[in-house]
Length: 77
Image: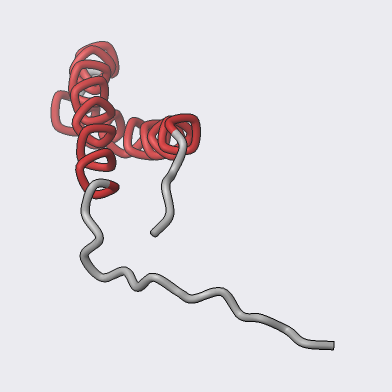
């Protein structure tokens, strides 16, 4: 079983945050027809999403569902 460091999970969360923010901001700006309202709402939504994503990743790391433990291969010369 492997373990992801908190820094890796944080980086993954950050890159997802940026992509999701752009999408959320664009959609909310089109719906509200005001970029300022879209910006405020997108910031609130994305902060919540980043926090929940981090928790989601930590919970999945505690599970071994779908993972196999590989035995080390010994190479004889």
